[in-house]
Length: 179
Image 1 (cartoon, rainbow, N blue to C red):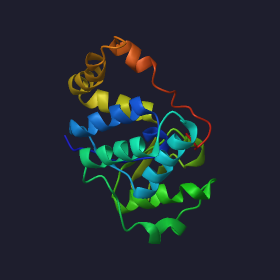
Image 2 (image 1 turned 90 degrees about the horizontal axis):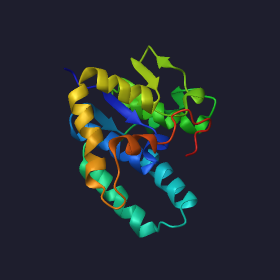
Image 3 (image 1 turned 180 degrees about the vertical axis):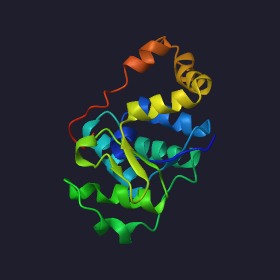
């Protein structure tokens, strides 16, 4: 099975449980995750803005751990392609530029309304996190099931079931690009 390359938008990296699940799926070799420093900047800036209970040092540690967990995920050298794309929100063009540079087949975002569903000239499809995870499950349900169950097994205070951990994930139909 060929592993798809997927650029993850900031809004799917923003929620901790979804970020954790997407990271675990990549670590399990179900796909190759990609992002740019610009995507991580947007993600962690928004977390800091909306989560006053978290500090900059805590988020810097989380960002470092994310980068260390998937050291090959960072896309560079995409900036010259940013102006090649016209989107409803021009601030999202860097995501497509990173996807083209990374030779990704997917962009995973919960902000579907601001992106075309596909860029056939680049072989890129734009999908929600739900669509993406469902696709991975159809490819290898056993591995996805083990990955999904792992975080719930590790939580003891409070005790959490796999279903609880999934139902607490944010919906993928977010109407805006900001997390």
